[in-house]
Image 1 (tube, rainbow, N blue to C red):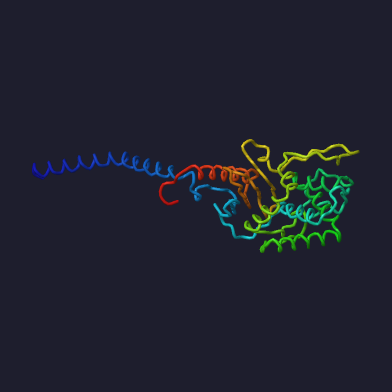
Image 2 (cartoon, helix red, strand yellow; image 1 turned 60 degrees about the horizontal axis):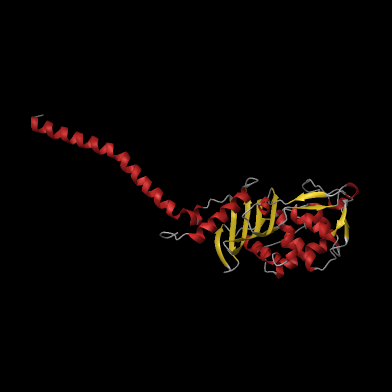
Length: 302
């Protein structure tokens, strides 16, 4: 190798080393640029909300528009969301809310052996049974409400299914008044209809948004406090008009709400979330996303 060749080789080697040294800085700058661009659209990008619920639906009641949906079509078991229809049937049938009902052994859950704070023999008004069913999701209370209907539980469930058909809930079916049966099923869109219908009843709105209710169903009429299964109703910053939770193994953690966010009444349906707090965390994510969506002008196509 002559002098000229050696010189050319050395210059090429030096240039190669310099280029390699510059690569990490260039890559870091490019990564920073991409990250900065993503941050500009992240708050209102529905694909990045990362909900833990397998199905979600959010409807703006003012415009009647679906503002967010995730896997909205499957038919899901709905667990205690069922109790909203139970309440509708009780109220629409005009049963006396002052009538005294008694918990019997027929109301004891022999399907899943779920626990209850409502003892056999406890007596209270139909209104108090409605409160326990909607606030604390008491299965024995929901069972007693159905059992005390004219014609018994079978007639009550038939009325539930007839009401679902009347409302246009095409993919909804009920087998009991509590939601313990895995064949109580619906879709997100059908449940949005149920939430909107139930929210028209001031009594259902009032009951489902109470943090707790106290009912004289303890021994010798002692007051027993039943706490709401949705802790969001007691949290500052939330303006919730209706709420109901549900859970059995088949359904996963479920939550339906009517809530006002940025002065817009919204129906929020969250189904089959995994983890005890997942549905409430998802609701908070939806609220944050809606608030960001309302205030932010997005860049590019979302």
